[in-house]
Image (cartoon, rainbow, N blue to C red):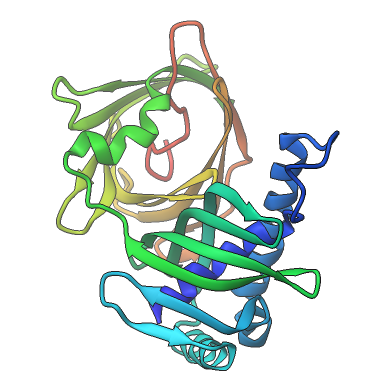
Length: 313
């Protein structure tokens, strides 16, 4: 079922008019924006688990193929049936995707390439690459065929972590009455990202911490470990969802209590990011989360302040 689910995100390309790139006066930026809007609309429908709505974006004889296994699903009716069964079996499934290339073959045919991520609650997200052919029928773009393949396993820790390389450097923010300075650097072999932070409070108190971010080849995911000067420590996982990075963390606090939360880090531009904490708990009980934080790069360089110091400094 994986191939049909992951490839469905190709409909994000359907917002491109057949002659959109040929019409004078329509900028590439406008086309890109239209695609993004279509992505948002489709992902919303998919994540509502509406099998009929998803199937409506395929041609009547649409074909989805899993390249690794050769399994084929043919026809809209069969696809709808599989979507429905999948949604029933995986009620926590969430889909996101990114288009990397759109090419107009002729006015009524387009090819689309990109990547998808499907997550299942706390399980490891599944990432795949897809290629698809879209055709224009009755003034609507529909998926006629699609093929999905597993993304290559990173050949090194650096390959797995390089999408986070933009964090390297120094950042500052104001959070919970403290001025926080964070520095991120590569380990000598570039096998790990090493993050250190210092939170300076108004009364002169300071909390320091160290975080290690690395690739776990066994679980095929990015993991993180934190150690703070007050004796607290924690660990978590890191995953990408479109333009955001999600860090699911737990931390043993110095008083022995257990805290957990998800940090959502959004890259605004090369010098700015926001960090929001959601779902924070202490010993299993919900507790108020801190306000979202805007983190700015300093002239010295660039990583994140609240990115992953665990759950609580």
